[in-house]
Length: 338
Length: 255
Image 1 (tube, each protein chain N blue to C red):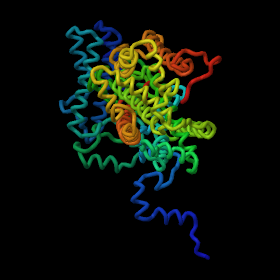
Image 2 (tube, one colour):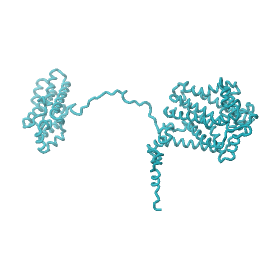
Image 3 (cartoon, rainbow over the protein chains, first blue to last red):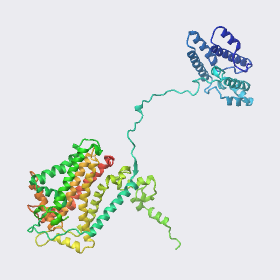
Image 4 (cartoon, one colour):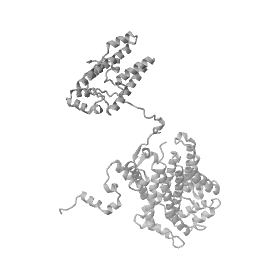
C-alpha cells in the first residue's frame, strides 16, 4: 500500500530522460504515483470500488490525460494545466451528480472523525450501495490514509500540493463565484446635494414661535396701556383741519402729490411701483441665484424702492405742516397723528 | 371616605368614555398623554390644526430667528389678535352717523369711558393695526432680500403682495370708523387720490364713498368692508399663502 502518493520515481526518471522539463516530469510522476496508490487501494478489497466516475476515470486521471494531450498538441504548459484542471473538475462534478446530490468531498477533520467512527457507519454505507454512500466509498482506514496523504502533500508545499492527492482542492471546485450582472453606475440611485437637516416642528419651531408671539402680545399690551390711541373731536365736514393728512402708510403718496400731478403721483407711480411692480418682480428677475453678491442689481433697485418709500413717508409724516408745506420738526413742531 | 379614587383612576374615568373618545382621535397626545418621543413630536403637529400650517419636520435653518425674524408669523398673529379685539369692539359700536345723531362717535366715547377694558382693547386694536402694516411690509422686504420669491415661489410672492394691499386697505377702512375729525379727513384725502385713477376713477370714488361725498353711507360701507368683506378675502388669501408655502417645499433656503 502506497502511503504517500508522493512521486513515482520510475516515471520521473523516464520522463526526464525523454527530455521533459523537470517540473512536468515531477507532476506526471506524482500523478502516476497517485494512480498506483489508488489501484493498490482498490485491490486491497474495497467492496464499493466505485469512485462515482461515470467514464471509468477518476478526475485525477482525466486531468492527467487532458494535460498530456494538450502538451502534446503544443499548447503552453500553463494553459494545458488550467484546462486539465477544468476538465478534472467537470469530471468530478459529473461523477458527483451521478452518484449523489451531496458533494463527495469531506473536510479533513470530518474524515478523521469518520475514521474513528464505529464500523456501523461503514456497513451502513455498504448497505445503501453506490447510490447512497459517500462518493468515494472508503473504509475508515483508507480515509485515514487519504487524510495523511493530503496532509503530507500539503506540508511538502509547492506544485506537489496543487497537482497532488485526491483531497486537493482545485480552483473552481468549490466556492464558485459567478458574475450575475454588470450594474452600470447610472443604475445606482444618485443622491445629489446635501440631505436636508430637519428638526421636529414641535417643540423646536413652535416654542420659538410661541415665545415670539408672546413677546409681540406683551409689547402691544404694554404700549396700549401706556399710549392712548387718538380720538379727535366729532367729524365735521365744515371744518377742515390744517394740515389734513392721510394715515402714515399713505403719507408717502400724499408727499408725492406735492411734486406731481395727482394723475402721476397719486395713481401712475404708486400703481407701477406698488402692486404691479411688486407682483412682476419674480417674473422679471430670472436670476436664479439667491446670494446677495450675485444679485447686486436687484438689491440696488429694491433698496432704492425701500429708501424712497421710507423717505417720502418720513418727510410726509414729520416735515409737513399746515397747508402741507415744508416744516422743520425741531423748530416748528410735528403735525403727525397715527 | 375609603373609596376616593386616585388621580390615575380619575384620569382613566375621564378618558374612558364615549364623549372623550369622540373628541380626541386615537393616537392623539391628548388622549394617551404626551411623552417626549419622536412619534409624539410628530403627532403634536399632525393631530391638530398645525398640521395645515406646519409640517411635522422643518428645515433646521428655518428655526433660526435671524433668518425669518418671525415677521410673517407675527403678521398673521396680529391678524388674529385684531380679529379678537375687533369682535370685542363690535359689541359696543354701531356704524351710524348723521346730523343730530352721531351714534358711532358716541359709542367710541362710551367704549373708552364706561366699558371695562374698552380703552385698552381699542388701543390694542389701533396700534396692532399699525404694527401689522409695518410687519407685513418688513416681511415683504425680508422675503425679497432672501430671494424667497424665486421659483417655485413666484406665485406665493404675488399672493403676498395682494395680502399686503388688503392689509393696507383693512387698516385704512378701520381708520374711518371712529368718525372723528382725523378719520373723515384722512379718508377724504385717500378717496380723492383714488378718484384720480384713470378711466374709472370717479366710479371707484363713488363706490368707496357710497355717494359723491363722505357721509353716513360711507361709514356703513367701510364698516362692512372692515369687519366682513376684507377679513373674508384676507382669510382666503392667507389660506392660499400658507398652503403654497407647504406645496413649494417649505420656507426658502439660506443665502
